[in-house]
Amino acid sequence: MNIILVSNKFAQARSFAVSTPQVIFLGLLLGLLVVSLAVLMNYFSLRYAVTNQSPYLQSLLEAVQAEQTRKTQSYLRESLNTMAARLGEMQAKLQRLDTLGECRHQAAGIHVRPGAGARRCGVDHSVEGTLDGRAWRKSGLVGATGR
Image 1 (cartoon, helix red, strand yellow):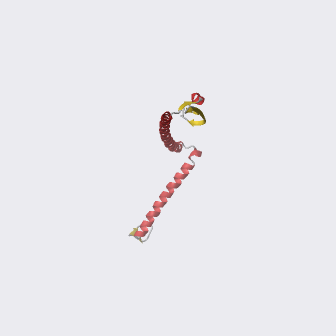
Image 2: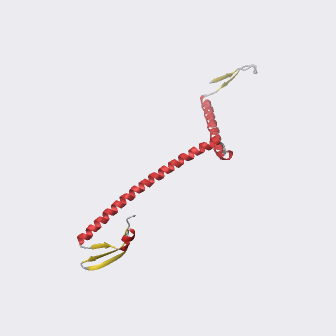
Image 3: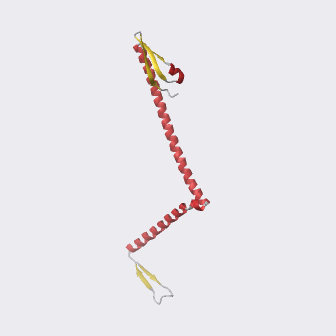
């Protein structure tokens, strides 16, 4: 590609020959220069937005922070809902196991009555029963109902 410059300052016309790789290189160099200037302007505008008390830049920063806070709250809410669902499933399984245990005790002829701890806080801390006419007692944490 030939570029011809004509001006009143020059006594004669000047011409330059530019090849395709040189044009591509100049285009990439110009693009890199534009991107570099944009990154530098963004960095300095955000870096000094708080110290300069610029209302426009502070509103931009507040909008970004509000969006981040909203995303965090949404994530926490979803996690809490998932944990609550899992807790409910575990409580249902525990209730089924307690019912199954009572049925097995009755089938085996063991008569179980909850200790004083069950009446006080909803948790069986001790269990008393009879097996073939002999009394037995077990102390300790047997199960928690989450009440």
